[in-house]
Length: 564
Image (cartoon, rainbow, N blue to C red; front, side, top):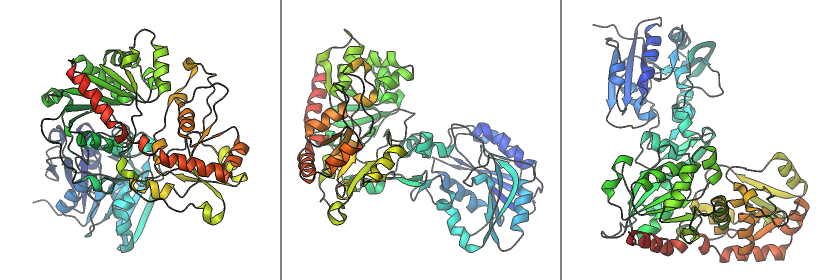
């Protein structure tokens, strides 16, 4: 019979069996040898059992499906026999003396958590560095939170129980590779809620905290849609192929109009590229190889550059196809997928582009290849109109007499010089970097005087071939700001220059088109002019919702389906 282990080591693994022999080998080489290893296979697609050696100190437990890091660690904790717990993620490695150093630190009865140095060093503690005393506390699981922050997941609840002991000795390695979990979570690593969802095939609503901010709370965001009625059988069968990007709940407007929706999703979404399983509505997912089983009447392929290869694959199948493309032809060129984009645009039964300017750019880029009659225009990121049903708040400036502007999302084009210039002119810039849920758009954003679009001035001289994506794009923040009745701040284009956002802001009557910051300050302090712009924005809110255009889109889908 084996002696009781001094320390239980928990190894979570999901689809990284190739790393396991190195990790386990590094544990076997440790002194002392009175350890046990609990390997928890969190729903891998194979290979884990074969990678675990036959050693009486090692046990393998398995989840039937991926349940997340917290659940895997808790399964290991519940199975552990020792009073001290260490962690060895499958892709990491113990260096010489790691367990001995952790046990030395935990030899002080007042210490509850211990950690050593890690290679490469970083500001955040990594799981491989840690050991702690066994307590009743458990890791937060997926239903509560997914995070890259171990403090939120467990450590903050252990700290009040005793001291934290740290050693400067570098005794473990944190392996850098594309499949690391934190990379799927962090927008700074091209991750986010949908990258994470697709990698781990998460079916339930996600609550994600990463890069120091709450990125998503889907259960809260989509609460109003949980009892959404299913469309009656017999409606138009539409296969959504690709990704939905921002404001994905807009597809509920298609269900409202009787469409039966199916989803076949890209495997490599960025964080903002929404993929299924969707936490709202009744979209039925199908795997890419099985999508013909959905028997669609028409394929609605969308929306951004990473969906182009999938749209090309669907095009080759010969089904009726409507291709909705937003960002960006230039991206497809950079990825070496321009030929695929050209095939889809020229071969689809109909194509929808995000702006008149993007349409003109593609017609100029592909003379004679595209049929103008089959090229339509509709911004692909428009929100569901349900979010408009909220009351405006009192503007901050009504109380303090200052000018308050707001910047949503990433600060593209905003630098320290702009921030300093605004401050010198008494213009406040409020930056919303975290998650502002749609139910708060109207109440939160209406407190400000105006909202920023990308402060990048067009300089194409009116030559559509010289236009950049900044010139062709209608940023997704436009309908968000207009929903709250906010005027849109955008640099005035150069003489004769083409700029989609400036053109739309002018057409809507809510643009603050400025030549320089002095001009901007004058316009923002023009009380009557700004009141007119706010009224104009409020009056066109419905126009910038998906619902406003959904009847026309469904009619197009029906025409394409019926023409085959």
